[in-house]
Length: 218
Image (cartoon, rainbow, N blue to C red):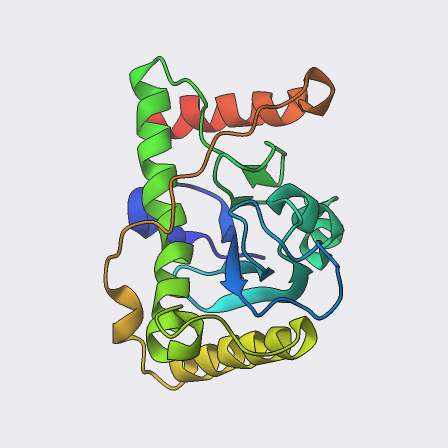
């Protein structure tokens, strides 16, 4: 049975299994004319999807995705998506770039009531753990922070390096070296809210989010 207490202590958000984000790590342009690694900001990168717990321990890391894939596409193709499709208890927190699902709670796009504002505040305060976690990984492994340019390797090797850094991050945390993950940082970027098509909406997920807001934030 999952334990939600550590996350709930952060900002009172119930039922959180983990916090989800997708980050871009710059790489040199592949030799081919392949544009799949060109991200929306115009540089070549690999996309890394992270899920972490309340301490910043990585629960899932997928580093092999081309930077040109939208975050939502990475999620749809990931092991996390397959694993949580039929999940009955708890949810991940994702920012506004992701679609609302019963297993993935996102912010309220246009909050109106005090309870909706409180929900969004708790969501942001909890979700920022994954931003701080990746900042901590960049701080420890300077090859990832971009100050000396991009990774000078193929997408495949860059993905392996990134995965190794994430594994070492977890080993550090499990060895008790976790103070450096607790520094507050600004979010990596302010996400744009996903413009959902009507057919993408999940009425059951919307009803579940309303219940969470009413029960825990009213």
